[in-house]
Image (cartoon, rainbow, N blue to C red; front, side, top):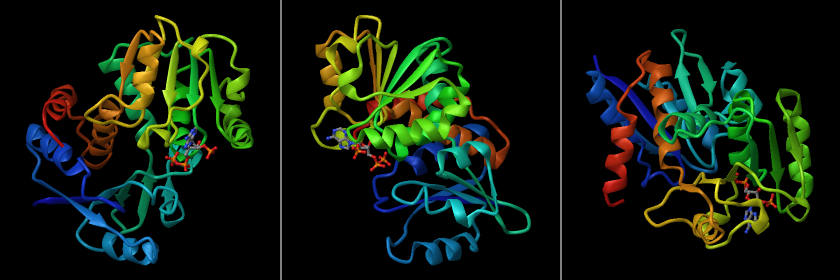
Length: 274
Ligand code: ATR
């Protein structure tokens, strides 16, 4: 029997999730169909509830609906509750929904397994304090870094986020202008990358051992990664690996099988035009 899933968002036409899950399914020998559903910004709740009453065993959720799905789930994982965002929905046998969030684990798996960067005892800077930053923080803190600093254009938002999650690890908020030393890892979680802006991280935060990671992925290096390169960063990565690894974790939650072909898929997507 075919297992049906989809990704919901708006817009959704360019989502790579159907391709990624199709490759996981083929590799694992599972009969699966994975579609895209563009749901309305106005009336999302009703449209989503109706959709999940159809044949779907679950779905992925992307922008701008990750927060809106939280109250629609009867069960919610700890990491999704802390992130206040759901990217994976599982339909339980009684028809009710369980919400989870695999974004953070996707990032940590990409960094630690694919890219071989250890996070334990490292100093990490996150630029940005919006939904993307919040989504990755629970898993980053679980990796036992020495410190995670959040800097944001609107400092009050960084302070709120640090206060909300500081019980889970060594987390602090600092204005960009007060960052006075280097970091082992700098993560761009701002939406500045969608344009050509770069968050105002001081140049002295980067040295030849600093790993720079942009949550956004694109065919060309992002403005943030180009800037990090000009500062002599040790390694530059975009978010393609995170995209594939968060999908692998969703697949595992749905099917109980962990696909082991992520690295090959990342390579394949890198070599394929959008
Ligand atoms: P997302 O869900 O993608 O995180 P968001 O919640 O709107 O989206 O958050 C966007 C983040 O990018 C915020 O941290 C925002 O800073 P503000 O809180 O000050 O708005 C940050 N951001 C967006 N454009 C930026 C820019 N040009 N320079 C620096 N930070 C920027």
